[in-house]
Image (tube, rainbow, N blue to C red; front, side, top):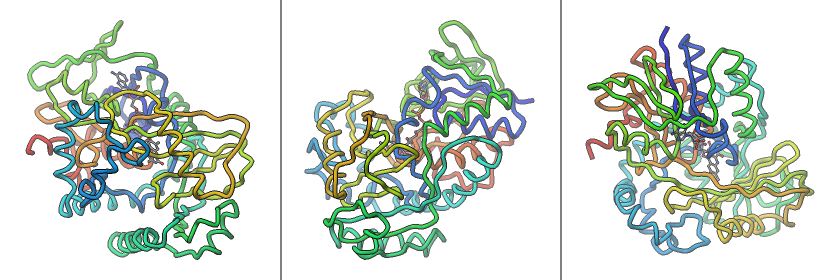
Length: 416
Ligand SMILES: Cc1cc2nc3c(=O)[nH]c(=O)nc-3n(C[C@H](O)[C@H](O)[C@H](O)COP(=O)(O)OP(=O)(O)OC[C@H]3O[C@@H](n4cnc5c(N)ncnc54)[C@H](O)[C@@H]3O)c2cc1C
């Protein structure tokens, strides 16, 4: 039986463990803190496969150069972090073109066609988590933004067979969500999309993995990786050495630090985002809301609502920038009749693992015969976790998969 060790117990590491174990591997997951408590914790919980696309979009940099330095803008680059980010940013800017975007969206939108059924299968298999099938409601303050998004979703539907978007007038969106403000000019509804409570997914996965016999180590940091020629022999924590046939690096925004130990230079940075979770909210909401003009979101869960968004490039840190958290509250206030109030509020920040082409790196690490990586899922890591776990488990256990992996190849940055 193949013995696999996974470094990192976020949603990607846990779901990879699930598929590897299902396929018969002996699996160990090593997590430096608690499972699922880093970026996989406070995210919006959207499983909305029709909106997957690479982060660098054509014209993004030219359009938003001024906006990038504004502290309350949805995409913000901290000026003091510029020197450390400059290499990554230079590459990112290169990817803001039509050809790379089209190549990336094809890979993401083809892959994401499997997303919903995989979540269904995981739930049917007994993983206990909070899953909602309420669709996604996109709401807009400006008609021009609505039109642009509608065209985009229609083209995604025609080209890739994702769900057809339904235009909703001002009255129709208000009928769907009476809490919306009169500022909202209209919307788009995608009926067959899911959302889940991210914390419940990691918790449910951990329970299931225990039941399946996966060895789980929390509060155990991997500090070194031992290599002989092109073969990884073991990994080290403070107290122990772990040996296996194969190793999977799924350490989210920290994956590049571990990669350096084996001379694998993955260009990765942290795209920080924030959320505020309000428990027992007074405002009633039935659908997750995609705030189409201000790039934020509102997600209703059982007994809670989460508002969140923003993309901050400020290096690897979890500092909570109050001004940017305030920016999220402001954005949401534009769309709702009243501010959401509840019993308690938790402010949270998480670091999305971001490659410069906005695509995950999934596959074998170049020049090594038994070490693999699965990270860089940026804005869609929760939604992509099952399909990524399935792909990487097939690659590790059989050396091949039916998925087209070219756009996800971990070797692609070696060429550039
Ligand atoms: C505000 C916000 C909203 C988002 N909304 C959505 C959404 O709606 N839908 C969606 O699909 N995605 C969303 N995302 C993105 C999603 O949260 C991430 O893509 C995903 O959580 C990444 O998962 P991960 O397992 O790669 O990383 P993480 O969850 O960060 O897990 C990596 C783990 O590795 C561990 N680790 C690191 N180094 C070591 C080491 N040396 N030894 C052992 N363990 C180590 C860390 O402690 C961590 O637990 C959002 C993100 C943010 C910030």
